[in-house]
Amino acid sequence: MQQQSDAFFRLVGDGAISAKSLAEQLRVNKTQLADALGVGAESLRRQNRERAARVQTRMRDMIEIINRVQPWAGTVNQAFAWYRSQGLPSFGGMTAEELVKDGRADAVKQYLARINIGGFA
Image (cartoon, rainbow, N blue to C red; front, side, top):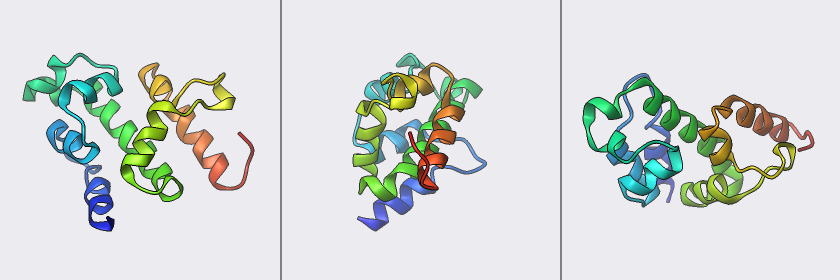
C-alpha cells in the first residue's frame, strides 16, 4: 500500500500532472475525475486542454489536499473519499471538493493546517 501512496505523492511537482495517471491512482475514469475537479470531461481528454492552467491548478490543489489528509484517513482512496464527501464545519458543511471547485482551495489548506496543529474546525 505504501508504494501506491508514494506514487500519488510524486504526481505533484513542477511538471504537468497527467489526468490519466491521477485517475488511475484514484481508481476513477477521466469523466469521474473531471466531475471531482469541476471541469468539463473534454478538458481531460485532450492533452492541450489538460495542460491548461485552470485544470492543472485544480488537479494540483486536489492532490495537495489529499496528501495532507491521507496520513490520518488511511489510504489515498480513503482520503479521496473524504475530499468528496466530508462536510467541513468551518465552511457550512461544504466538502473540500465543493470548496476547490469554488476556487477556495487555499482556505481548505489553511483549515487542514489548523487541524494538523491541534486547532479547532
